[in-house]
Image 1 (cartoon, rainbow, N blue to C red):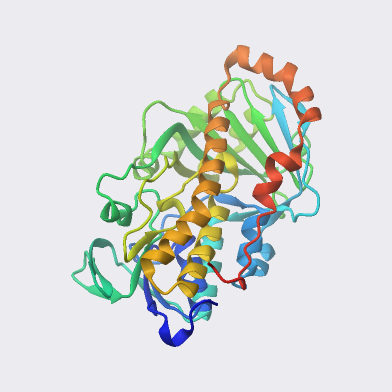
Image 2 (image 1 turned 30 degrees about the vertical axis):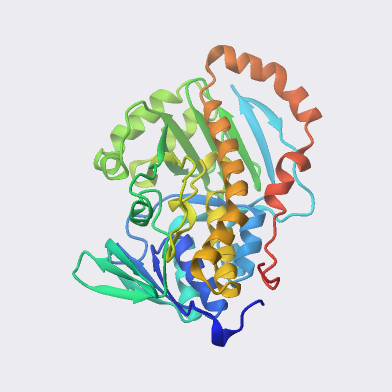
Length: 402
């Protein structure tokens, strides 16, 4: 390392947000010898969390560095194959060789594992701590919370999601998350002869009116995710205030002409529907940090869920941020090095997600074009060149940051 422990300026950190990026950042900081405390706005772990997400091979490799990957694998459904369907016609997609399967895990389960791993590493968690402000000084930062308490440390890390308070403290003019025009839902149904889905395979389906995807869980149930087009933005709180029966009515109407979309929608019950809210995508954020504060995860780079990389990129960034603070004494210089390591990668993946979102509602003409071009496209595509750089990415934890 370029700096020894006795001369390092950063010894303590406040991490704002206890979802995915927050606990991983705190655990990585402890691995780097920096004491971190996580401050979460909600009064308890996992409040209101539903649905699941995918962890790509690069994200799992990053979790290995903090000793959390095996616990995640134990509760995940591995997906080693993918295919695309347009109006029911299936097209197998190429796969990368030499990487582990995609891991599908429940959000609440993932949050619990990451919290537990961070706590085992010595991270302290404070709940019911909604950040309202922060003040930087020459040698640290003070955080103010809605309950009237304060906390101080050498640095403050904003891992507080797409509605990040820390982002606006760093730059009051910072852009907010963009709405993609899609609302997200996840349903669960029992397997049946007319819903025969091969284990370990995920299908991305372009229906006549909307996109959806489905796969078989380890327990045999089918899980499906719906992206419902909606010009009107609906917050998660507003969406969950609408009765599940009403959402199911809309989903059944949307997928009524699709196979197996119609069956999936018809057999999902209100108790087996997760309303997971509007899908966001972050535009480029001009300022990732100040002298004592920095952003990580969805607070600074939230790609569309179309990329399958949102959680994995957040985990990567958490590890890289900890490396920089470990090796570079001055926090501002460490944050600048972190941004240099991450910006190009995350923005490139975010652009890919934006392109995919535009294809999720292709319309009748667009579907016909996809029918004709897709077999040729996948036959000619160099899959390793297109996605290998994303999924084969590995963090060299022991290497010093220059």
